[in-house]
Image 1 (spheres, one colour):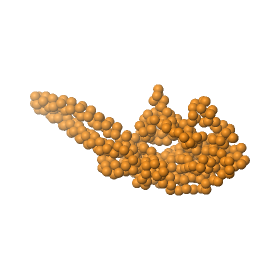
Image 2 (image 1 turned 90 degrees about the vertical axis):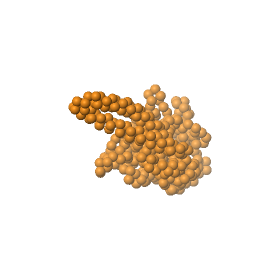
Image 3 (image 1 turned 30 degrees about the vertical axis):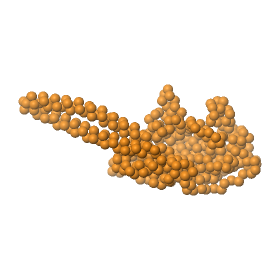
Image 4 (image 1 turned 180 degrees about the vertical axis):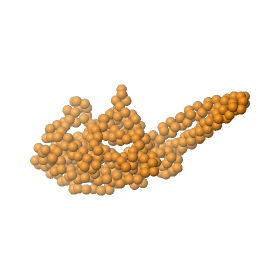
Length: 423
């Protein structure tokens, strides 16, 4: 959520930057400022009113001491009227604050100046590409056919148990999943992240705090009886660890890593993009989260990008890094880099990670601050990234490392799988 002080002081800059995200309701900025002015004026009148009540209360005491009872009674009547006025002002103030909040939650985060112009994924900027694209032999298989050949996961069985988009992993496929999770967690621990195991459902306050509500309610599974939401990513519960907290500057950045299943309705998905593991409703992911000093968060972002890169290099996968354009960014992000790996059998790039800096947008909702060296409280910056999401990593590993004799397991992963090939 944007900070109203910044919007008030920089309205044209706010509109200009929101236009980079192709935000269609720029008029909300003007409406917000009108309501904010009403709120501030109402607050001033209320404060003056309360100050006048206090002053008159003192006068009444003095008048009674002087025996001026009639004048004291008149002053008491004036205080009674001021109290009635104060009640009306408090209602007006509360209404203005609610109206202001209702608008603020509809306005996305401001994009960082580094965000490129553009509206669709094709306008994203490739900032780096690493690794050679594998040249597969004639008759190479896509990962869903490799899964059938080696009995690694079963999509039809998932349909029977739950529905489409809920794969059942088996045998070496299940072991590969578990091995990747352990590998990612161990690498994060080496990088200084503290592992946590969060709940897999969150309440409405948690979903609101990280920006999933009211923006993405249609993409989350909602447990209506209890008002809980199945998490679309561990970012949601992990970031909420610091909700309503004041951190000490010396303890920043706070670094968390969590493995969790993720649940997404993926409403509107169709076509070739949903084949196999390309797009599923339940998948596993290891998420890294950092709570950073606002002056150092972009250094932290670079560090997180380097961490994700190291994982892909150890998995021996060709990858590229894209800086997302304004129209392809999430509602809450200030700057996002996507990682894509090349799927050799499908001959296409698959997104496997997004690493984002949200600056103060989430922390303003979270009410998460830190106390600096001058004992002043300031909003923290929040960042997160997938390190990594498993379905498309598995798809790319199977396709890129397939041979005539099976699927080769990268050397870095073999201590976890206990086998060097799937056959």
